[in-house]
Image (tube, rainbow, N blue to C red; front, side, top):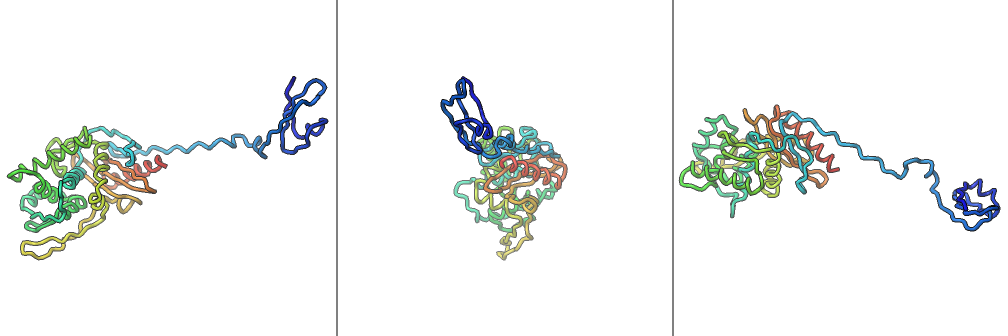
Length: 325
């Protein structure tokens, strides 16, 4: 017995064959072409002509970006999956990105009242002058709420606001003791979050030789911090105007604080979180954005300028979203 695969024209020339156009007939024949049985197989018009028609086209590969920053890391905020990595575990100075932890510790306090007032001390102002540090321009003697201090901390990157918060939320009988205790809380929180390659020795990033973290650890910190509604509201704000209470009890309208994170204006979906810079840290940025219900969080450390760190972050956000699809 032999199997014959016949085309429609051939079928028409064989006695007993069905006259079916567009259908292949599989004929089982014995000697003398005596038909035993026939089966028809429908064929989609053009299917045999379109080679590979049923095979999906491969997805176009996403080009891995090149960044100027010494290290960088990006992750899917939903599950912590890494999307990009350049030296993610390299320990580097963090500059004012340290203040993310300052805010995190404050906002984690039990029974926190954001409307509690703090009196601005001369020590905070002297600290700014001595270190030529970034400032929220807080006025000595003014009463400022904790909420306002957090905006002063995160938008203009006020080291005076950081000092005031550390002094307020640290425990001890002296200012030095309270600040030391607050920094200890920062390190305890880092440990609790699994930031194994991080250590803080300051409340604002002006380190004393042992203030460092990694791109991965800072991204992890940002992701945790963004779970809090108050933190999200603060870091997403482009500008904020505080009204403080003066020594005489009158209201002072402060000059508006502008967020140093330019991505809030330049990148669609940006939601925060914090810049950092310094002679050792160079130019750093911890960033996050949400598009189509997906959030990407990342960090670049030791970039080459304010403009370039924003460009680095933009490249990594675009890459992250492209990877998520």
